[in-house]
Image 1 (cartoon, rainbow, N blue to C red):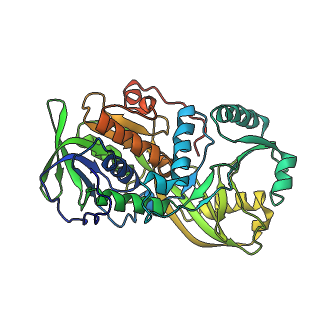
Image 2: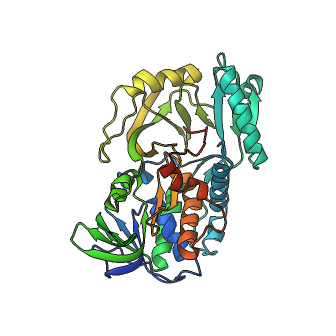
Image 3: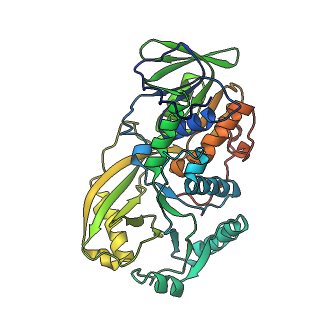
Length: 409
């Protein structure tokens, strides 16, 4: 399926056909990544329908992303997934066929700075750094003196060391990546339709069709679950249990009366609050201390979390943030995988034409290039061809066998 130079397929209100080779449930960044990689594979000539209930993406995880990218994971597979994302973003136009209309993506490589408040976590960071370095990441352990020299605005009285990487870590223009993937997928013939999947028909151990809220029944050979925080609801339609649920995460954009004189790395404080530069402003966020599952349409802010948790941590770590003013704030959702907070990707163990790309637990944007590529390879070739994602498959969910990853924020 190729369409270089063609006009993008129009976004439809109802599917143009009653049968497609692949139906992707969810058209935000994960579903769109699958659509782009699949439609650009020269060995795939099938039809693809993406069903998305909210084409504004206002309440999607994609719409609330912080656009972060890091290499500082503890499992080699997660490191490699992020390394492909960094390379894909860095060479975006080349990856999209050299099309001069494809823009370069802005990347700010100011890095992540994990701060250790005790020797126990310091040793964890040292162990993690060895794994990262052995897999090609540029992470190194910084002493308190080195941190103070490079970033004199920190209060380091209660810090033992830091873990920092200035190569392929920071944040990037994920919105342009998403918009371009979607435009190019549609140019390649992928159809996007406004709608909601309300049922999946399974017969003889295979998904045969999806049913839409309009009453339409769309037959297909493969169903891709890319439904973000609603993933478990889609899986249940096929009789499949998926331990993925929406959990709230809070983000604040603020100005400082005394701005820092240099970029602020994405700093993870020992208490879990994180903060980074955001253009001329700053972005901070955190996980609530009480972190239950919520309804997928619940985006109500916690009225106290800024005063009780975020601001005290900021002013303690960076005294220059004594006088700051919140400009905007929002609650978004992690598609939280209860088992191990890692993505579930690939085919179901029994209904093999139901394919997952779910449960990213906050890593979806930075993992979307590798996961989209992997799912597309599985559909087009029946196997992973570039990076073996099998350890992240559904089999571990059935076996209750968590995939180990020690660096989850």
